[in-house]
Length: 254
Image (cartoon, rainbow, N blue to C red; front, side, top):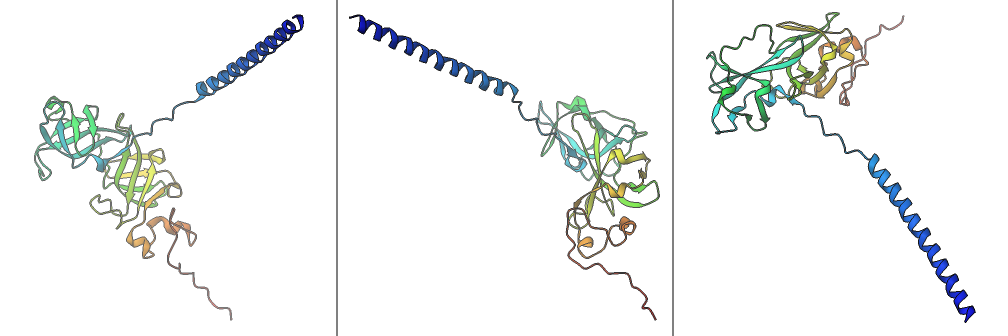
């Protein structure tokens, strides 16, 4: 009948409208989801940094044949550009005074339990180290003459060799564990000049360094050399003092 045909037409129209609205909502939802996915960025890879102690003392192995070329005995830094340039490779760790070959930083392929290079052709003989610095053991002072300590290590980017931070303590001997001596780091932007035995940092650099470890001496109440410039307000970075600091004596009033 005419009434049935009208009812079916109205029903089909409403169904089509509902289907269209649903499709529109789905399309809008997908566009929003796709836009949000497009704006998401993958997390930046963590920046890799190595220390001098990560490479010195490690065996140098070729990737092609597994041949051991020697052991890294020393690392050389161009302090004018603050770049690690080359590594000395000796026949063994006890080869003191013997001649050694060198491996340029760009020849390294991987550093882990060993130092990997491509093949034995990376070894260079009689490489000059004139103008280069080992940094370790160098005295670190400020422009005003404030003694900070001696360099024991440094951090660098393995891809470029750029030295980022200097790590120092009171002795500058890497073999002494950092649980014995308190260690600190200073960014190289604080350095004014660097010579063969002394590195001079900007005035007030002792207030901008970071403490890495707390040694036995500090836990016994012996402050670092520059603490006198803080008076009795000095507190180690990130560590709570476990002893009571002596107070200055005041003369009693008559």
